Image (cartoon, rainbow, N blue to C red; front, top):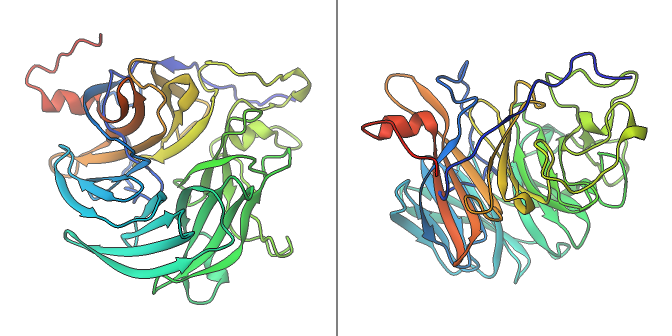
Length: 384
């Protein structure tokens, strides 16, 4: 059986060279009725870049850009100016910012622990240190509150993508920042969308579900999860794969393509053959994912040297932008919505990326086209 509503035509645009991008891992969301201008079809404009040696991840919160290295979390403004630094980290590999509590969670691979910080002005206040001896190789972390009511005293769940252990760990976090194990979100080794074989970037979507990158070369998906602990799943308490909204799934049973972004079997699985490709809507090594204020989903399509934006209103509508010179091997992404004037929001006006540039790791900054026009006198640019 095929879907009754076919995907609309794909739009492909170039994003104009280097710029910065933030991790969307734990960002706050803005609810505004509709995007304005030509945001839905326009490219991103490269603004500039700076060297970012040893940088591992980038994220945004409150208009600040946060860049993680093994020993430092550096806080910069939108013009790259250094505002503050959190030093003394021990082989930090992942961090996220909880947009509700404004807490910073940092995973340190050396001692295998998560440190939790609050922030007032330019001061980071350490709230808790959590040894996590059962973790092995954690590359990304994210918070999500969905289902947290199952744990008395918990205020959010923290998820850790652990490629060596082959699981996405789940920990309940209380008001003090202390973490308690509470099963897992997913394990590796299966073929259905409920499994994550090579977990990477994660972000909470516009319905408070969790998007998880699976960089397994045989999958190359971003899977959508209802992370609510499944009490019928024994001690694992896994989440379940969830169909993307505004999509009429295959009948009588949804197909893998209903649960994932990327190349997956549709309603006629016998006609599907997975293969690496640069086709629009298909991913090759998806490693980071972010959400903007309208809910659109941005994926760092690393080995295709591009970013792809999937429309929240219809995830089958895709805009791809980048290229080897403009976005070489992007591995961490973040977006930020800009408020201009009285109540006007420019969704995803700012995008920051960490890329593997010709001279090493760079932090690159991009603006949406309509925001670029507002920031330049002529509103004209040459897209190379």
